Length: 106
Image (tube, rainbow, N blue to C red):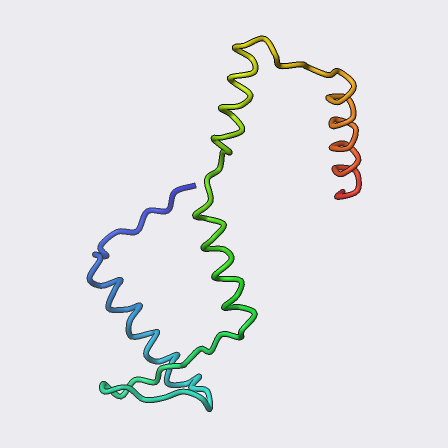
């Protein structure tokens, strides 16, 4: 559902948001807060070692390729040469294991 707001421009919205933020920051200043050059209060955030480790790991994971190109090349080569064997038992076992994991998760 769309909401139509008339007679308001972006500058008015930005100015209103800034004023509310400054007021809220002054009222809710925490003991660890510091004043900056303009007199506004700013909070500081300190990350734990665990949070820093999680951030580094997430960055490494994001850098990994989504597809294992070497495995794809090996399978493609085996298919083209006629050496790729499809095992119905192995496929059934994988489906069964996957369904078990889905049931356990729900």
